[in-house]
Image (cartoon, rainbow, N blue to C red):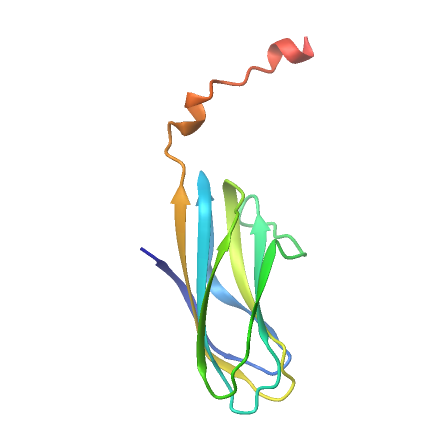
Length: 135
């Protein structure tokens, strides 16, 4: 089941905006992100969905962790889902870049779904002891 992430009313031409909210990663195994948007009638370039990572939810990478182009179709609603190989722990935010200088993108909505490892999975591999390594 997908969880809502947030909405952006309008992304101006040649601009980038963040979909409100964060995606928490706890023992994350797979992550799917779905974004739906309405391209303006004069749009002339693709949008790009960008994911940024933070280990603590406060300090964000300045370079994208992952990105995906969304092919433009002038005047149409486009929805795209993509699968990401996520870090097991941390946080992710989603930004959308409007690559068009000619028109806006509106009604941007994001959802996500996470498949997580069970809590006991790490323990099944045994505990890692570092004391003997450095002594």
